[in-house]
Length: 114
Length: 113
Image 1: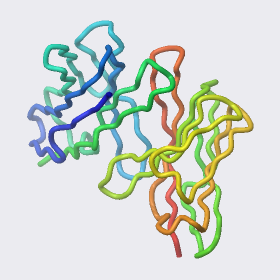
Image 2 (image 1 turned 180 degrees about the horizontal axis):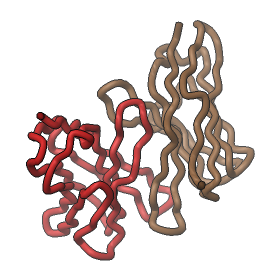
Image 3 (image 1 turned 90 degrees about the vertical axis):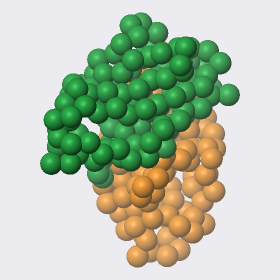
Image 4 (image 1 turned 135 degrees about the vertical axis):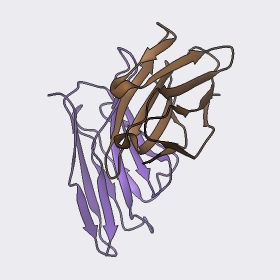
């Protein structure tokens, strides 16, 4: 069975400091892993995706994530937070088998302090 | 531009009334999904469809119905049997051919009045 755990429901950082949003996954095979961002009253926007190519994935708005198979982790990072980064972030496992369900983490709310 | 269009953005439902949320995609994706999101909550799967003329119940299908008569369209009807329909509804499609990426619409707010 597949699962996704986002380890923090809320993260607060000061503007200009690094961001770390943690995600652990469980899968019986190499999954496709994604990070999405959701601003209030909006749909989910793709930040980046891992699909078994490079383990360090660069996304939009300066975000990146590293796939670590040994730790079953796919943490999202950004070197310097901006006020516009305040949003909800979701870690997602999209199965290779089209009949399996997409698995969403419960989300991490990122707060940016001035 | 390719994408997913949800309408309306805001909808009000009276007690005992059925309402339908529209979802249209021009991405040529076979797989489409409806999710419900309550404030401060994650996404819960209502219905999904892997191919035209076929759909499956998700985790919270009671009080909802769908159809998939065309590849591009996957409307969701919120029936009067759904006792607590006030929520944010998200439609999505998945590219199962290349990259497995999921694409989302902008969402629809449904409020009971």
